[in-house]
Image 1 (cartoon, rainbow, N blue to C red):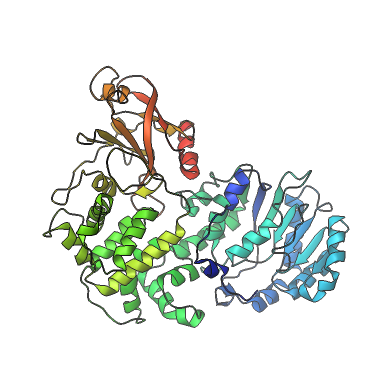
Image 2 (tube, rainbow, N blue to C red; image 1 turned 90 degrees about the vertical axis):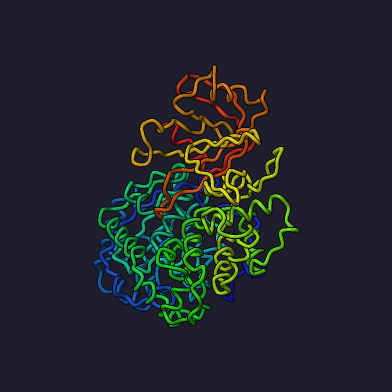
Length: 573
């Protein structure tokens, strides 16, 4: 209630959590039918302050005549089975708006009332009437966001824009409780023309869950990745409003970004840093780094002093093209530990895995072999620009805090630094397994890489292949059969009785190790090359066909749920 972030009492770490889509898939919550209904009210010119519309302005607009009330009732008749037999919780913008809506609904012949903080003494009585359906439409402001258990709610009306994603999910959650005889929750969200600051992207991302597809494409394709039993249906005009909003919010140019940087201090008391700026304006880091280095952008916006340009191009490229595409707690923490020492390292104290991560970092930043007298000199050079070292620390702390999975160790007969379920670029993988050396960069581009020294073969798999990115000879049939069995199709020339194909069939007898690296598609939602998830070791349990061979690999570790979902889809096209 003091407005402070409770996470700071726990070092900004969450020990365990379950997101909404996962809870729905596990049938811990009631599925929803979400209807995006066109609202005739235009909010594009309503004043926006401190991350939200001004409540007073919204109230005045929503209480101008009966037109909007009539439209709401028309849509209730359109989307509800029986408008006189609902238990609908209706979220309004202010106490005046809630009272207004309750009075208008009562005049229209509905059993309606309102509960706001000034009527708190009626809470128990109104709750009882609501549960008995003596009230069908209960209009509230924020009073029923949390701490209230009303499983029988079967309808939610969003009669105002909800700027806070947390509050939106709390309000939606009031209707997602399981109850006997309740098949699903019906949600009517009234969507008007909005300001570009309003975050439709985050709202629908929370409903869809983890997917590599952009929310814009999810909307355009009518939400193919929703949790089990859930639907989102957007009316054409509402859909157009939402898509226009997302495009405006994500297509700003460098000049517009600099304006946001200059205005930031006038809109919030939060310190200007990358995390706060990105969160406040709902701008993904990828979109910021498309415009330049964070520190350079701050200089151009006249928010900080100028600084030297050495390493600037390389650090910007590293963050934009590499670190924002990969995801490894152990690797990021290793780089962070180096950055906090200004990359002043002593190789004598490093083990083999740490030296391998230094080689990964060398190629992350410089991309070419050599150019320095030693790998130690290469890493020390990264820290020459102190301002950019600060930026590296800032970026890595954000990325580490966002990691939402547990990476796992893998036992191999040789040393290497990669962890199962973490995501790495191809170059990082090749460096980790010794294909890259400090003096020579491997030119491997194929879907397999074999190390004779380690008797280990790496399989690089892209699930969703398109003819734009792959030739007809490389459109292999790869998909998950279960969370632990992966179907993989070999190169076209492989056959089970000789050469490469026979080496797969006999890999156990020959102690050959097979390691799988899988990505969803070639490019992510920001147009960057996707990295590969390390699935660990695979053991052949079956094979059939020839030229190419089809092989079923048994994984030692079940694949992560989000990758299993995307991979299993490929089995049915």
